[in-house]
Length: 166
Ligand code: PNS
Image (cartoon, rainbow, N blue to C red; front, top):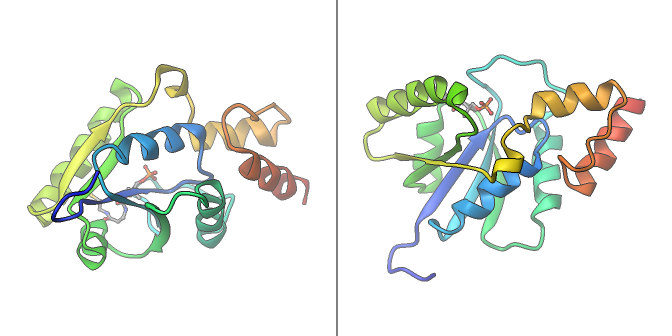
């Protein structure tokens, strides 16, 4: 799709690590945006203990989407809306898996709207068989020896195995 003013979207999150559910949202995002930046936050509103460093998460995303020139992965510090201005993004994309996601997502979208009315939040819905996947469950299942090969891409699986073995 080519438009006079290319639409740049930010897809922010923790991505610790990126899952097939995130990948699905990225692909859907490319239907509405010309370029999509997967933005890995140093500071998440959900304070979580990380497994991968922010740089490792960015590298994994780059490996997963290496072949796709419209997708970029970048780390960011500070406010999401400031990063949107820095990168020229007009859109913030977030995935909505279930009603339980909604309250948190609505609150963030409205806060971002208040902070910066020019940045629009767009919610996208993953395929139903990706709806139960979350990075935190992938970390937990993998740490307990479960098979997560259908929830993450091969490079992520390999790094998860290495991380949990060491
Ligand atoms: O994957 P997550 O952890 O649910 O993503 C949350 C994230 C990173 C999108 C959110 O915490 C965020 O935007 N953090 C950056 C700091 C910021 O702008 N905070 C105010 C959000 S309303």
